[in-house]
Image 1 (cartoon, rainbow, N blue to C red):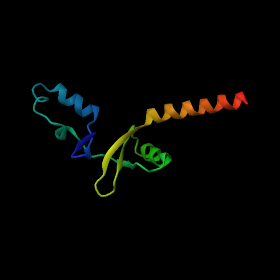
Image 2 (tube, rainbow, N blue to C red):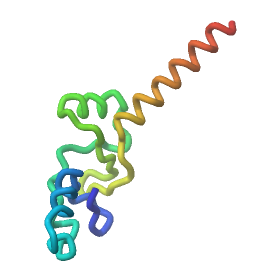
Image 3 (tube, one colour):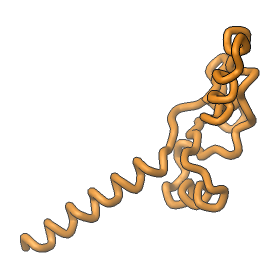
Image 4 (cartoon, rainbow, N blue to C red):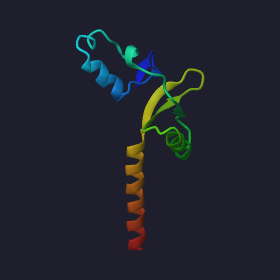
Length: 102
């Protein structure tokens, strides 16, 4: 994620980073702005998780920027699909174990 003055302005993909590092002499002249692309979508900090996950699924995103403020969105975090799946699996397991103990 690329942030300027606290505002989310873009993101840098691993592919763009790899390409820039592969070109000799070029990586020393580049700044984050040169490699970034527009943010495909964001989730509001108070947006329900189900809605944010639907955005990620519909757009085939592995991560989604979480922002606060509508007029001048400020980056407050990143929602990572793998981390969400891992946490949900842990919660399901915890609830199953609790139910079996009853």
